[in-house]
Length: 132
Image (spheres, rainbow, N blue to C red):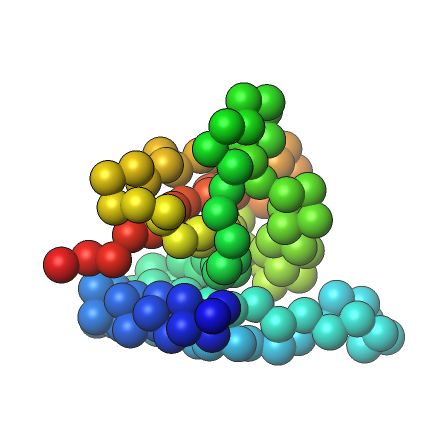
């Protein structure tokens, strides 16, 4: 099912952002200079005019709506993964994209800030519902 969600995102992003952004899917790279740990993020978007880039990773699982701590239902391993992608790609902004459980109950996007001279934007977690 994760591939279905990724395909949905691909179509949605191409339709909505395709004219403004160049979108690369399943872009691969290496975490280390020795090429010991391969990275493969789901989406890499580059604005066609400004060249502003962001990395996104699709998560086919639900954020825990009942989670009231500072993590807002985001798994620590998902955050580590996104930070690795963003840092190695030279992106100041990263997105974790989750499916919405119910169109009427889409969770608000959450912004986390990683204070680093390497990441000046932020990390965002979004729940997506099918658009009509």
